[in-house]
Length: 187
Ligand SMILES: [Zn+2]
Image 1 (cartoon, rainbow, N blue to C red):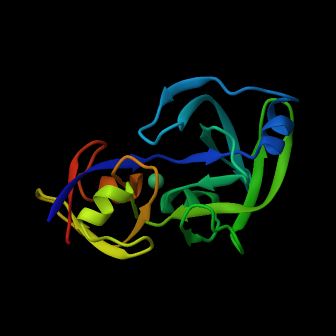
Image 2 (cartoon, helix red, strand yellow; image 1 turned 30 degrees about the horizontal axis):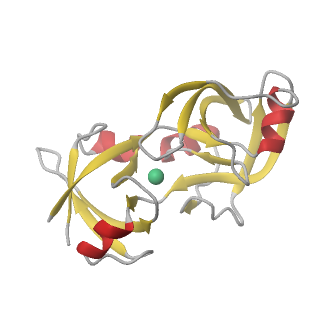
């Protein structure tokens, strides 16, 4: 068992520069609310409304901008919006669903990009090698406590990362976990 820090990913979205400029105005620059654990990433002060069938979810932007717009929601959020889930790793947006994004300047009909993020472990190459983990490998993680759960199918993502395991709010709430708790890799 290896102990790592858990982070609970609340619903959020990443915007392409093009979509950011449409929603907020040309050459708009996001305002940082706080830095996130992964290098360069930050929670912005700005939010966008994700709308489907008159249901509205306020969604925080995580910057900086990315190549493609991606909205990461929990299963509860998908249910609320009455949309089917697409369980994906970040960046894998083919055949995912869309919704309407509403910003202060305009709205966008996003054709695809809504995902339910697969459980994943961010890890740096050195630690991954030490722990004998391969990129894309699927592992299990367990928490301790009265509502202990075995989380299977945690995908290993090796890169220039801080070592953190990411679950969404549904997964964390159902198992009594909170941000920055420890979780144990079954390796
Ligand atoms: Zn992550």
